Each structure stands twice: as C-alpha cells, then as structure tokens.
Image 1 (cartoon, rainbow, N blue to C red):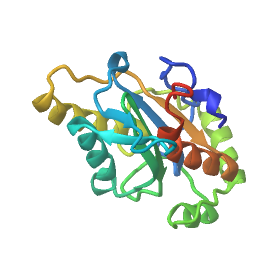
Image 2 (tube, one colour):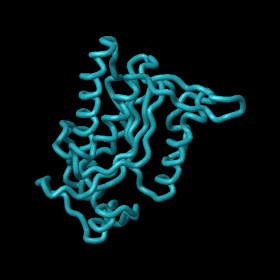
Image 3 (cartoon, one colour):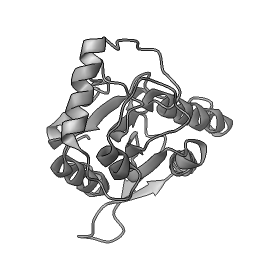
Image 4 (cartoon, one colour):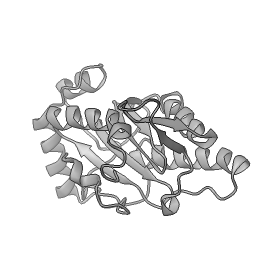
Length: 208
C-alpha cells in the first residue's frame, strides 16, 4: 500500500473488505489512533544533530508496546510483523495463521495452510481470491466481531491498554475506530514493513 493511505490526518475509519471473513489466515496491517491525536504515548526526539528521529515512550507508550507484544500469548494463532508506537498512534502487522479452535465454513488449501503456519510469507493468491469470491457469493455480511477475528484481537488490545492507562492518566482514550488493510502481495508486505520501521524517522515530514 502506498504511504498516502495514511496521510489523511484524522482518517482512521476501517477499510474492511465487504464480505471478507476477518478470521481467515492472512496478513492485516492495523493503525490505531489516540482520541483527538493527543500525544499520550511519548515524543519524537533527536539525540544528536543530523541523527534520525527516535521515539521516546512515555509510561502509556510502554504499556501500548508491552501489550502489543503480548498479543500472541492470548491469541496463539496470531504472529506479529513489524510494529511501532508513535506519539499519537501506532501501526502493526498481524498475521493470522490457521486456528483449529475456530469452527466455521472457512476452507483453506493445503498450500495456504503450510504458508500461514510457517515464518515465510508466501500466500496462495489463487486460494485467497477463491475464498473472497466464495465469501461474496455466500454474503457473509455480519459486522459483529467473531472469536478469532482481527476485530476481536484489536478490541481486546485497545481494552487492556485503556484499563491500565487509566490508572496513570484518566484522560486517556482511543479514537473509536481503527484502520485495517488486508495485505495481498509480497511487495505490499515488504513496503509496509519498511514503512513501519521508518515512521519515527519520517515524523514531521508528514502526519502518518
């Protein structure tokens, strides 16, 4: 995805794919923003002249970092890609593998099963497109979060961060929605991994 996707300063509304089952194995890029873009998570600093920007985490930022890293402990079917905590937002890659506890009509090919249960990102695009076409045909339009879905993971993460953040700063709050992007190509995956790592360095050039 091109960086311009994140340039809209206050636009964090979901870009959910219609009829796509968000429990499905895949790679999902998530952006979460604090309410009113308040810098709860820390500040960007430059240690020495001509050096790259660095993110200095506040106590709330440390909580956001800690609980994101702990997501796989609570959702074993999730792996983490690159992520970054910024003063007023965070970006992170969530990789959903096959979850044997999920009972649904999701069908996954053997090639795709092998892909998403390994550390190598090689999605079977034919299988993904077939699943997407099938989902549209079956009209899977329910918006209520299901166990094992990206919505459930994100909601749980936001909830636990809020719970502990309020002990430090009662004014903390998230923007009510979040931005998600389904990564469908290796090129997009690599670009977004780099984009995440470079976020602190690019702070001030554009709001992302």
